[in-house]
Length: 251
Image 1 (cartoon, rainbow, N blue to C red):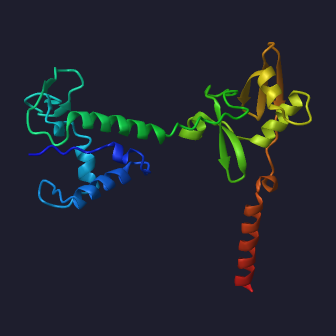
Image 2 (tube, rainbow, N blue to C red; image 1 turned 90 degrees about the vertical axis):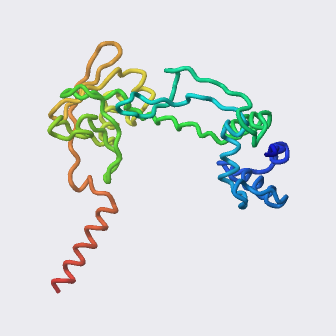
Image 3 (tube, rainbow, N blue to C red; image 1 turned 60 degrees about the horizontal axis):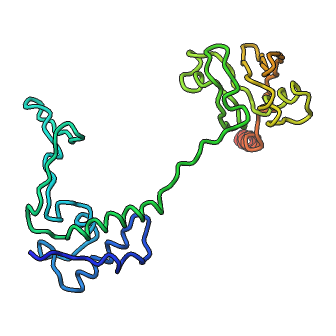
C-alpha cells in the first residue's frame, strides 16, 4: 500500500471554520480530483480525512494496552491512565500517513484550536456579592432577577425553599436605599460600601445589621414594597388587558 503524503503547507493558509472542517473538505476534494480512491473505492469525505489525520495507528505504529479489562468477572474495559505499562510497536503495518506529516498535522491542529479557544467569561460581581449573610442558616445572599426587578435572596432559600430557610428576599433598590442612609449618603455608593462595611447580617423581621470594619454596627429595618410598587409596567398592562377582556365578556 502506498503512503498517502499530504502537503500541510498547501492548506495552512486557507480560511477555516472554527472546527477546521473546511480544511478536511479541501483535502478530500483534492484526493477525489486526483483520482485516488479510498479504502473501499469510494469518494473521500471530511470525516475519513479527519480520522486519518487524528489516528496514530495510521502512521504504521501501534501503542499497545491503551485499555484493559477490569477483571475476568465484570470484563469492563477501562482506559489505561498509567495503571499498566503501555508498549510502542514501530512499523507494525503499512503506513497511510508518514509520521512527520502526522506530527505536523497535530501541531497545526493545536495551533488553530488555540486561536478559537473561548476563555470562560468571568463571573460578574455585584456590589453586595459576599456581603449579605443570612442570620437563619448562615448562607450568603445571591442576586436574582425576577419579574419585578433584581432581588437578593438567601442561597438556601433559593435552592431548597422556605422549609429549609424561612428568610425573605430583599429588593435591590430597597437594599441600596437603606445602605445609602446608613452611610450618610443621598445616593448609593458601591465604593463606600466596599471600603467601610465588612458584612451585612440579614435577620427576621426585615432587620439588617451593618457591621463595619472598625467594629461598629448599625441596625436598620427595611419596608416591604406595596403590591402597587412591585408591579412592573408590563404587569400593569397585562392586568388592564385582562380586565378589559372580562368587561367585554360580561357586556
